[in-house]
Length: 122
Image 1 (cartoon, one colour):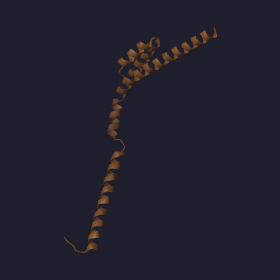
Image 2 (cartoon, rainbow, N blue to C red; image 1 turned 90 degrees about the vertical axis):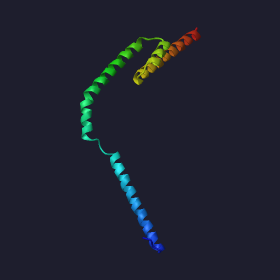
Image 3 (cartoon, rainbow, N blue to C red; image 1 turned 90 degrees about the horizontal axis):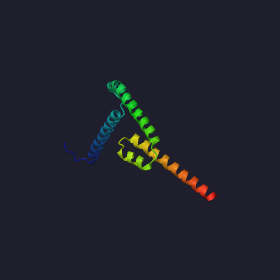
Image 4 (cartoon, one colour; image 1 turned 135 degrees about the horizontal axis):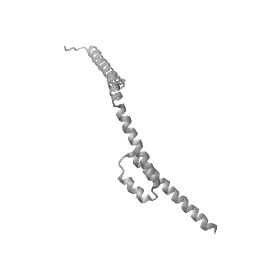
């Protein structure tokens, strides 16, 4: 319905803006409640069912990493370790290999420093 009164039009527009603002607030509250809703109990049940399998996989991975760590202790060549690093696919494997490379390089630097100190003392 058309109205010619400007004051009434302003009141109508402000009422419409207020309704839109309230609707936006309700929508934001609904989104927030969905976003931060606690997990459903059925999802937790699925986790309980899959837990033994994931635990078994984790144990296998730990055993493989332990075996790799022992293998890396025996390697004394940075080049060989670098080849292993390039071939490794898992993050944890690469992490162990990089640590072994750093350790080997530190030992080489220490040995070179000691050799340099021995020569300079002569």
